[in-house]
Amino acid sequence: MNNRLRELREAQGWSQGELAERLEVSRQTVNALETGKYDPSLPLAFRIARLFGLHIEDVFVPDG
Image (cartoon, rainbow, N blue to C red; front, top):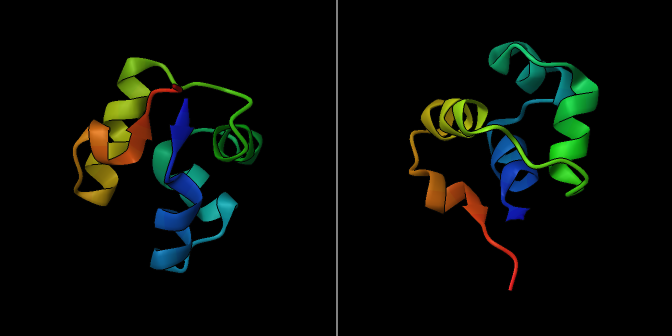
């Protein structure tokens, strides 16, 4: 699944560590999400979207 997480994080001026703290996950999880190595659980996807004030569809885009 593709996502705009890095773009959204950088627009806020947050490091991966800062975003991780806000989401209550590890920095490694944020890195894995940004590089497409990990797809978030549905609750995490909702937390991410809510944090940026967006709909899930505005953050995550299914492959193909």
